[in-house]
Length: 369
Image (cartoon, helix red, strand yellow):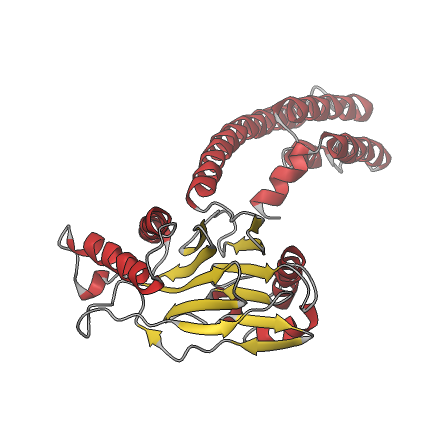
């Protein structure tokens, strides 16, 4: 059983009350069966299973009580069999006491580690909420929802990112995937999100915003002399600007998967005609050049943005997740419902095992077509 499941099991006090009946029944059963067997057959050593099993779901106090009851049961077995004063039986009692003490010590140490881990995770969760703030549920005429799935079971955030910012008459969004994993990816994601939030609310043209983000990543890479091939930093990303009053969406694609447009039970891939290099690599072929693509985005339409952790998820046969085919059935649902369906379907398709972090944004323009 996974660590998180065991922790959840121990946190459920009502379930613990029922589970503790199992070691109690085990102790009683060993006492009864041992009394029915011939004297030369000793089942007392099996009593060690009772406190050991209890440690899996209970704390030190309950485990200690079960261990004490096991020792008492061992003494009772010796009295019933008339073997209580023998050296063999006394050694069995001593061994059971030692094992019980060790098991209780184990539960004490484990609980301390779990408390420290819980504190660390709570701090990490706060940091994630600060760094990867969910976009607002509404922005002008738009409804927005977000989804983040970390590939590592105990991780809260990886290198995938998203953000939203409001201008006077439009909403700007960013979704991206930082090269690499771990703390370096977190740092680069934080840098890009900070640069986006600092500049996106201004009314600079979308190419100027992309140039600003590209410059921020490249500046961070070279300021400490780390612009080597082994430490190359870049982010695949899509930038969007959605005007409030015009039924259009303006996009800049920087090596990122194309968004999907859900409309009337159909799915259309918004393939960009102008695809730029990933953010951070804009200066490789000369001055960075970012060109805008414009697509219709009418009332009732829904945009689904995602990272490659979604489309590159595989099932047991190694087949990629068919997002475009599945998304057609979600047309007509709101952003939150679309991401809820995506979440459930993706985990079901991969049997709950993601090879990479996955993030998604769903945006629907309000009103009727």
